[in-house]
Image: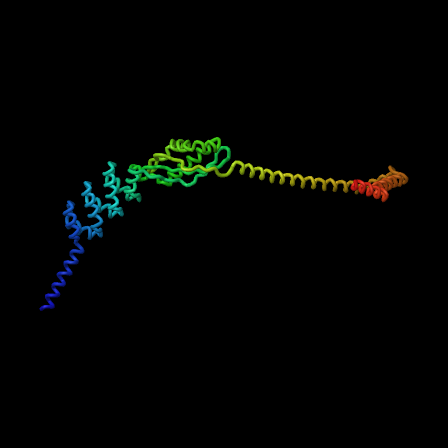
Length: 329
């Protein structure tokens, strides 16, 4: 009998534990005393829909205490859609405290779009500074200038869904800096008036189509880098030199080929001389004595050329002595 009673007690205790585990009675009591009107059957329905009731009830209590008029069904629907209910409620409370008109549907859309809606509200209240990387630009005189800027932006709640992010802001500011520096006549003008860059860039309306509103663009640092113009001129001169050398080599090769061709023609013409002499002797236009006389003239001419090229040993000695006398003096 005693074992039967103990078994019944154990079953009752186990049943109570399972009931309290499935039915969040403690959470219902907390919501009731916090002024949140919610039925116990609604909490049971959340369990059946595999929704953790605490993820819905606690943000609902927070919203009610802050004076927000939200419906438990909307929060549950946002949770089932994959949104962050707690962050959503915090963003709505922050927007209410900052007098920012932010509706539940708009905040839910921002959260489901993948943006941090609470951070967006905070940036809308307290603007943040985006620092650009080092941006290289070249002035008209060919001097490279390295510019670093700080962009102060404020979130635009109305354009958070579908608006471009920080990367677009940085890219547009960099493009504006490159254009402004490139239009400067000299790098000295950029160094003397760096605020002119920020003014020109700010007037371009770079925040169009983005999720932010640009408040100011401040030039943090300007450094002088390489002389790009001189380097380009040097490279161009080197390229022109190589082109000129290539053309000269081409003309030299053509001249050598033409010279070889002319020599071949001369050799060919000289080979025709014996044939012409034989033909002249045969036809009687040239006598035998005339031919021998011509050969004697050619031999005499060759001998004179050989003598003129040879140097007399006495003349060599005289030249050596005169060179020694000059060295002594």
